[in-house]
Structure formats: C-alpha cells, structure tokens
Length: 253
Length: 308
Image (tube, rainbow over all chains, first blue to last red; front, side, top):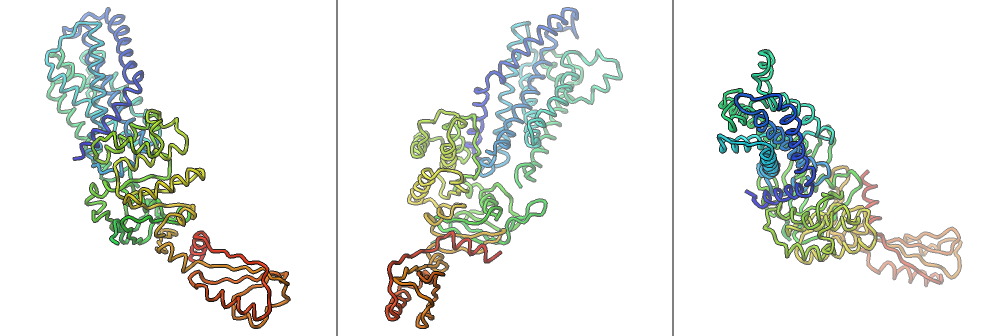
C-alpha cells in the first residue's frame, strides 16, 4: 500500500479547502442559518410539532443531510475532475499508486471535508435550537456512511464529466431535487398515500429517515431498511468505480 | 551496457482504429541520453506515455530495470520521472506544495531539505510560495522538471523539453540534463530541435508513422550517413573540368570560379589530399577554400525522406 501517496493527495485536497474557505465553509454555514430563519422561524412558527419534535429541531437532520450530500458530491467530483481538466492527471496515472489507493485518497478527502461541514451545520443549528441526539454513535455512522457513499458517487461524476457544465448537471438536476423531495423539511407521512408511495422510490428518503432516527428515535421508514438502502447504494458506487479503473474509462486511452 | 528500459514488439492502436505504434522494439542503456526523433504524430509521445503507464498498450512488453510495467508497475514507475510536453500544473497551488505532492505520489517520504535543494538548483526557491499561475513560462517548465525529479528517479523522460523556450533557457536545460546524466540518471528525450539531439544525445532513434526506422549511436550515424563538402575558390575560372579530375565527385560552378567536392564523413583525409595533388598537377590554382559538414538535421531529413 502506497500510504505516502494517499497522505500526499489527502493533504493536497484538504489544502484546497483551506484555500477556498469562503465557498467551502462560509457558504454552507450561511445557507444553513438562512434555512433556519426561513423554515425554522418564519414557517416553523406556524407548524407546532412533527412526531413530537419541534419543527425547528425536526429539520436539522434533513439540513445536515442536504449539506452532506451536496458537499460530498461537489468535493469529490471537483477533486478528480480538476486534474483531468488541467492535465495533471498524468502524474496520478504515472505514479506507483493503485486504483484503490487513488479512491481512498480522493474519496477520503472529500468525505472528511463533508463530515466536517456536516458537523459544522449541526453546530450552526445548535445556535438556533436545543438539540438532543438520542443515538450519537449511529448519527456518526450515518454521517460517515452517507459522506463516503456520495463522495464515491461524486468521484464517478468527476470521471464521467467532460465539462464543468456536466459536472454540475447531476447535482443540480437530480441530487438537489431528490434531497428537497426526500423529507428534509417534512415527514413523508404528511403526504397523501399516493405521493408517499412515489417518494419511496427516492433513495434520499432512506438516508434522511435513518439519520433523523439517530437524532430523535423517529423515522418514516424502518431504520434497518434505511441502512440497507444506503449500503446498497454504496455497493453500486463501488462497483462503478471498480469498472472505471478496470476499463480505464475516461482516464486512459 | 545493460538496458534499463526494454521495449519488445510494442504496438498501439487507439479506439477508432488509428495505429500509433507498429511492433516497436527498443533498448535504452543505463546512464545514456537517448533522443527520440520524428515528425509530429510519429508516435513519440505515445511510446513515452505507454512506458510511463498513461496509455495502455495494445500488444508487446516493456520493462524498466527488469520490472514489467504492468505486472510490477509499482517498482517500474517508482524509477521513472516524466516531464510532459504540455505545461500541466495546478495553477492555483504553490510551487512547494506542488512538488511535495509529486514526491508523495511516488511513495517517497517527505524531505523538505531535498526539495529545497532541487528548487534552488532550478532557480525556483525564491518563488516556492508563489502560485504556479504567477510564474513565467520558463519557470513553469522548470517547475515541471522539479516535479519529475522530486522523487529522485533513475530514468527521466523529457517530452519536447525545450519546445517554445528561448535560447538561454534551452541552453540552461541542456546543462541540467548533462548534470543529471553525470549523476547517473538515464535520460530519454523527444525533440523537434535536432540541434538539441546533436548537442546532447549518445544515441538517436528515429520514429516515423509508428515505426522505429533507425536506432544508432549518434557519432556513428553522423559518420556513416553524414557528408562533408569542400568548396575551392579557384585563382582563375575554368571553362571545363580537366579529364584528370573526372575520378573525383566534383562539380564546377556555373561561372567556373568554384569547385565543390562532396565525400563521405568517414572517408578520412586521403581523398582530399589526392584531389589537391591532382589539382596541383593540372596547374589549377586555389585562392581560398571552405568545408561544410552535414548536421543531424540533414541526416534526419534524408532518412525521413528516404523512407516516405
């Protein structure tokens, strides 16, 4: 195992986060604060409780997931797309580093960044409302699992994209709508039966539901199913990444 | 001399059917400077890219110091440094962070002292904290070299190292390459500047349309295929060549004032001496003389022309 290479890429990627502090950290924190003002205070004041939890507290896991998903995907996709775009990918391909090590380094760095931002979102939320986490270890487990899974998904997008426009395409057109429709700001029990069943096709529903369970012990879907669906998506992403390196898709000619 | 790189029956056909390399076999000796020459699109960069692991070969085997570049890629790649033709740098990162990443990628422990001495040698130390985008073109190219040398490779590939750089920088690069060779590094360079190959290379390979048409010691190549030309300015113009001089490959200028004698570079001085004696015997006076020697460029153009 080329640990030095993993370490070098990890440090390099984390340095970019420091360099782009404004868009990496300030922006997600600010948007979380705005969500709390708009949804928590303005709208939340008209909704008393959801499943026995105040509306402000209810949306916290959804907000963290929203940030976690978008940040995991954007960090990982940009991390691998940028060397492809500027041409420095030659150095990765010509170095004595295996596909597994490349994935560990890039996905690890992206996941670390998004976990940090997830926890920062939680800390921002704690400024506005009182939060008690019922299952903190499960909360961390969901945080880790989701960030790794969606960083892998972002890595796949970063390899697939051949323009900055395409890099934004899936996050903007698919991931953000799925997150908003995945129960970030409401319980899917609030929906009419037909739309509730339609919502179950959305994989993000399972992530948010499981994550919310770790906070308050309440979930729209059985936590075991949530965990299984997340692991299934993780396995799917791993399979695609393995195929990319086996075939050299968009990496080698 | 033992080969440090061995290429055997290498072929590459890109998706879409373009054949880039056809059954190329080549051995690079340890410690030599090998110049790979060829016109644009001949397959030079493809050959280098395959050896370095960037492009997948269609057929054939390659080893670096006995390590197969596919089966034993870690050991093979750890020995190789590559300076690609394009200026491919993360423009927003600092010079020092960039070379530090390159060293780490090749599995080497951080060694700031070595990187400092490397950047000092390449006159980049003063700019170590500068973003790469703020460097001049010459500095960017030196940074590419620093990246390639950051892991102390035994083999260095330089793909068109002096393309688009000024004369001073080019000479600086040549000095650097000589220093590296003196330190034991094997250097393989591709170049369009045949003067560069003539100046530095020990051996030359000529590649054309994916085929390696010649590999030869540079001096021997120039001796075998090079020509010398002796031009004699005559004291008095000649109307025609005397019969006694017909044995020599001479040509008389239109105005009869100059005689030109072309002979093989490895032919020694005997033919010239014999010509001068014959001229003396024929009573032809010489006012002045000059000699010319074919360059590697002349030989290259001749070779490429002959095989096309």
